[in-house]
Each structure stands twice: as C-alpha cells, then as structure tokens.
Length: 239
Image (cartoon, rainbow, N blue to C red; front, side, top):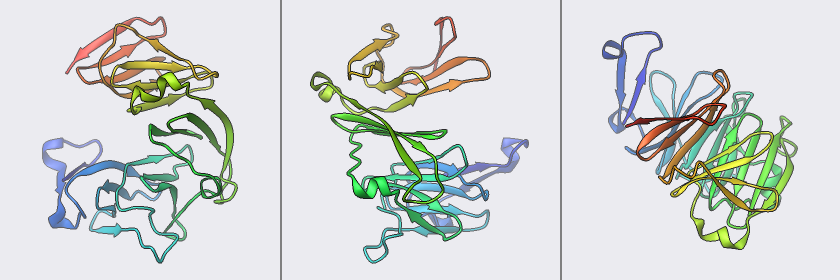
C-alpha cells in the first residue's frame, strides 16, 4: 500500500492510505516519485501507477507499442535536475514524456546495450550505469530522445571485483564514484580499482547521499544512519 501526507499538516489527520482496492496495480511498491505536474508515481512489480489525487492510471508494457513502459516490473523511479522522471526496469532505462504521455528510450540506449546488472543512479544531470565489467557515466544535455544523453566516461571494473555483488547505491560527484555494497562503501578510481572507504563500516549500505547545505554525507546502512562531516568525523544513529 501507499501512504501520502499533505505538506505542513498533522500526520494523524491527513494521511491517506491507498491500496489495490483504490486501483493500485499491485501491493508491493518498489519506488515512488513526483513529476513536474504534481502527479505521484508508484512503481510495482506489476505495472507503473500514476496518481492524480483522485484515481490511479496504470501503465503496462505492450509489445505492440514501442513507447509503452519497457517492462511491468519497475526497479526505480527518479527525477533529474529538470524534474523529468526516469523509469528503470529490467528491460531498459526510459524517461516519461509528459506532453505525449508516453515513455521514450534515449538513442544511446537503443543503439548500445546498457547492461546494468550492478545498478543505476540518476541524480542531477547524470545517469550512472553499472554493469558487470564497466561503469558508464552519462550527462543529460538535450530535450529529445536521440540527443538527450552524452557519454562522459567509461570506467572499467577490474576482474577481481566482478563478484563483489550488486551496488545497492551509487553516488557520483565531480571527482569520484562511490558505491554501497553488502560489505561497505568503495570508491572507484579511473583504472577500475576499488578502495574501501570508512573501513569501520562493514554493514550493508543501502543509500548514499550528500547534504550540500550542511556539507556532510548521509549513509543508510542496515543497522544505522551514518553521518560523515567534512572532516570525516562519523556520527552513527542506530535504528
């Protein structure tokens, strides 16, 4: 089920529970996002749902429609720096065209296989695609499917790290790529070498994000929320 809360109001008085009885396509929600028009999107393993405040519209894959969502199984929803919504499924990476009410696949992903067995990150104007052997960094530059992305960099993943497992979280800034795994956080150099950072953290890492206001990194681990300040001092909040 989904829970939505009206902003700046009391939770207890303004919480709405939405379930399959309200039109949600499936009960397990894998990801939630809000687009530029204010619609709430919910990805499930059986369809993509758009909620307008009154009812759901369900999007499903159609073999007869190349502009339908690539798969009914939604892995991730995310907004880029323009507010454009991106949809990640096992069958591809697309963005939602609000004017045409359809899903577009960037030309670079149509021409070349964008394997992302290890994970995808969409943040700001970058898309990071992590496959088994390489990590590709794309920059979002244009409005149209054929020129919306440019390839900035491809990093190799050295063979000794191929079996490290999936990346639960990928964080990319102007200098480094950092990945959260089941055994901690690693920084990846340009030659594909992995260097473990914060060696005292050996837990599963589910999310890495940077708080630019307070200049600190916030890490969601299996056992705690970890905050690292600009001097690399660690504060751990057990959950």
